Image (cartoon, rainbow, N blue to C red; front, top):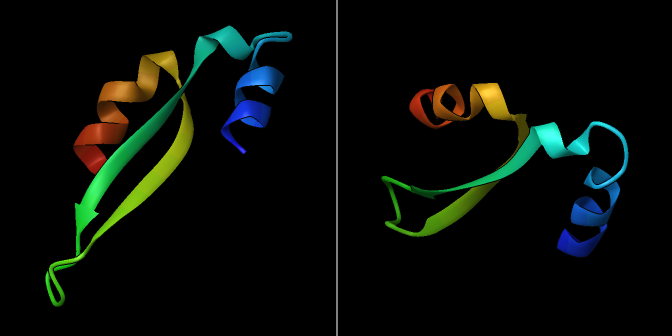
Length: 51
């Protein structure tokens, strides 16, 4: 799936976006999960601070 996302971002204005991945720990079980989102380059720091 990552290949599709990267390939589709290369056309048009896709170079202005970044795929962000953050690891989140579940407080109940201690297991980790990943949150992924495609964010505009200007908003990357805000996305990591918010989530």
